[in-house]
Each structure stands twice: as structure tokens, then as C-alpha cells.
Length: 264
Image 1 (cartoon, rainbow, N blue to C red):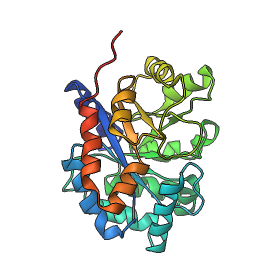
Image 2 (image 1 turned 90 degrees about the horizontal axis):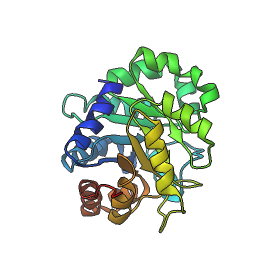
Image 3 (image 1 turned 30 degrees about the horizontal axis):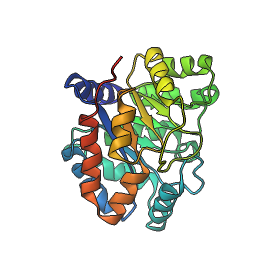
Image 4 (image 1 turned 90 degrees about the vertical axis):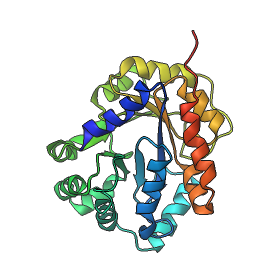
């Protein structure tokens, strides 16, 4: 369990010659009772890790689709405690790692020590905290480390190389490479330089590098995955789940297996 399981899951996919695929879903969108079934579907469809969003009233990194999913989840009464309890119920029936994406306000209100302990008890392997900068992460690192929970850091395309080096050195589980300037959400195309940025991160990081933000089509999955170890898809997954378009999700996951290695 914990941070090793995230790395091992990604490495096993890479060893087979495929690229990792991490779907993001919003916990409680459609009701928390659906969450175990959603996790099981994603695991059976070939996902590598599930990134599970915790709804929050003031999300700074989320685009419209994920914001709306969060509002629906909050309206359903979804809480961090209820999510952890639901995830705990899947612990014995899944092998896929779970990574929580949550804002620090929720963790602080819950209690940092209690949060880390409950993550471990529930079978959560890692956390992504987008509003916790390197300079302040010692607020969470000791408790997470004590319970072997990976703290997955985010790298931004606007950061200087010295910052990217520090982020790459500290990250656990994988390095989350943000590929756009802005919030989450589908993009029709990427800015020039994304491929070089991803390859720079690959050269800096001893852990797998996964690209996220704006990935919404099988073609984008295949293109980005040429330059890193896999992709993270959020808004398109959330939208497809809400609309019951499960085939769209399996098509995205399959695209990671079809990504061609970069030719020199």
C-alpha cells in the first residue's frame, strides 16, 4: 500500500510497452453510492491509477466541467469523511491505486494527522494538493510520510528550471506535469513547446512523468504520451460519466496503449 503501489502500477504498465492512463473522477457526482462501481469500471477498463477529486466550494485549479461536478457532489452532501469511508469499502475488492485530489483547506479542517491516518486506513495511496506550494508543504509532509502516503507534486510550464528541478526531486508516486496555462478543461490544441517541456521533466525526474490538464481526445492521449510516461484525463472523463458515455472512456484508456514511442 501507499506510495510504492503508485509507482509499481505505473512501472508495470511501462514495462509492457504501454503508457499509463490516470482518469480523474469527482467523488459524489451522481451520489457516493456509485463510487465503488465507477472505480471498478475504470480498473476493469485498464486504468492505471484512479485520481479521485474531493468536492470543494472554491476550487482554484478546476475548469467549468469539474466545477459543476463538484457543485453536484456537494449538493448530494458529499464530505471528505464520507468519501474516505466509501473508498475504504473498496479496499478488499480492488488492486488499482487511489490518489485523492483535494485542496488544503479541507485537509486542515479535517485535521492533518487524522487525514493521513484515515487515508492509510481507507487504502488511499497518494494525494495531490494543488494549492500547497513547496514552501509550505511541511504542514503536510510529516503526517503523510508517517503513513506512507505519496505527495504528488505538480510542475507548471511557466516555472523556471530551478523550480522544476526541486519539484521533480521532491515528488512521490509520479510527477504531475501541467501542460497548459490555466485551469482544467478540454483544449483543441496545445501551445508550442509542450513536447520539449515534458521531455525536460523526464530528464529531471526519477519518478514517472504524467501529463494532465486539457487532455480530452484519443489523439491527444497518443500525442502527449510520446513525450512522457502517461496522461491524466479529467474533464472528459467526468463529462462522459455524467452522460453515461462509457465507451468514450474506454476509448481514451485504450489510446494510452496505442501511443507510439517518440522517434528520434
